[in-house]
Amino acid sequence: MIFSVHYESWKRIRMAEISRERLEDLLIDPREDMGFEVKNGLDLQGSNEDKATFAKAVLAIANHGGGFIAFGLAETPRGIIEAEGRPAVLNRYGQDLVNGIVQNYCDPPFHCPVHLVPNLAGSVFPIVVVPGGHRVPVRAKRAGPNGNTVTNNAIYVRKPGPRSETPQSAQDWDELLARCLQNRRDEMFDQIRALITGAVPQVQQEPPPERLDRFIEAGFARWQRLAESLPPNAGARLEYGRHCFAFEIIGERRQIAPAHMPQVLRAAETHHTGWPPSGIRPGAASAHTQSTG
Image (cartoon, rainbow, N blue to C red; front, side):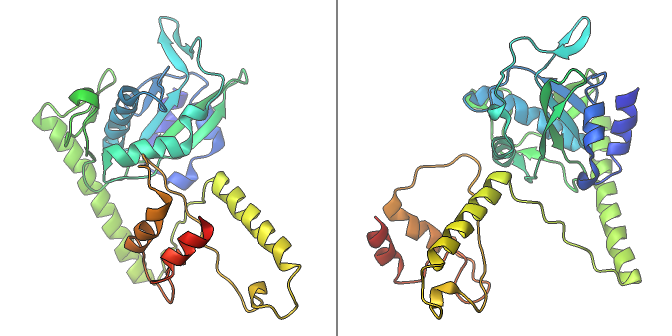
């Protein structure tokens, strides 16, 4: 019963309020239901079929109102237990990899936090938090390998079993559309409430991945070491202020030759003020590429 209580409350809370204790409770007596699914042996790094299997579960749970997917567990006659032979290294379930799959399969796309959660025995399991609250049905924007597992433009929902399937009846569609309309209504009421009370909604900014934080810190430390050797009034000391821009490309990536990178950056430029964040200015890209090789 622990999980049922937590899942029902999950549908009424925001993503930021998912506590560590709540995730740990999922592993005390894990049982699959409409908002919780366990997966074992999926290779999200090398197998496109496994990526499609995972994406189908994400699509269905998102349309059901949100929930969780846990890796490294297996369903047996004794219940759900730690899977035998599960990988000791958990890099195949990294947050960047998981969200790359979500971005490639889900329309509209959304962010799924990934947490490494220990059970009572000390074993660690990756748990993917799938958000609900979508105002429109989430569809598959691509098919799985050879058209299997996931069908392009299909919409998946959770069915008793639990199973992830396309809507098969008028009741399935009515429940899905009613959920989306309720989410739209809730958002509209929040906006009206903010106008009446004069409240200014706070923008929820998701923290960058830890790897990006380390990249920023290393770059700033490198700049400080180089700036120490400059004359006191050197412009490169940036004594009048500075801005820091850092970004990471996630998802399936195509190979781009270094000589073509300036063209790609120029095509993606967004001018907020002055020079774009990429720092590539017209006429300077080719010289920059030649000087850096």
